[in-house]
Length: 128
Image 1 (cartoon, one colour):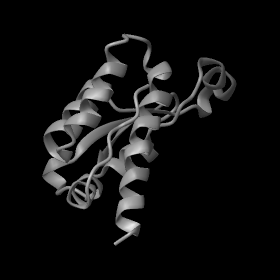
Image 2 (cartoon, rainbow, N blue to C red; image 1 turned 180 degrees about the vertical axis):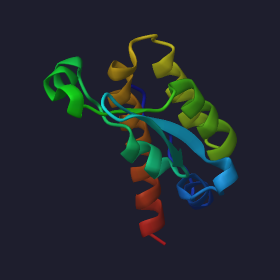
Image 3 (cartoon, one colour; image 1 turned 30 degrees about the vertical axis):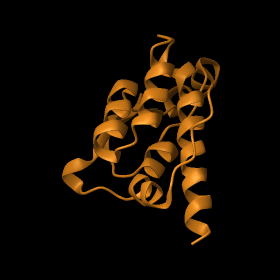
Image 4 (cartoon, one colour; image 1 turned 60 degrees about the vertical axis):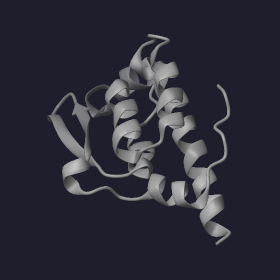
């Protein structure tokens, strides 16, 4: 995974903002017993927090208590590009998705990229 380039304060403010409800992305929370529900995601931090890396073994162990937090990775990359306006992060997400591995194997890399950008923003904004 390639490190993301540094960004400025203006970009950090844009990337960390909470978008309007009509700009929200939709994730899915899937549960064997109660079915699926839609979750509106309005910030990069919400997307990073919503995704949960869970292995097939962990899901099998959880059985009917299992939950899958799903965001279509291509839609996430498009949302980051078009709504959050972070072309570099979107391109990095596209590169992860292009590996065509199963969703569960993509999640740790996706979360790491989102966390890296959010940490950059936090550091920039903390320094005034």
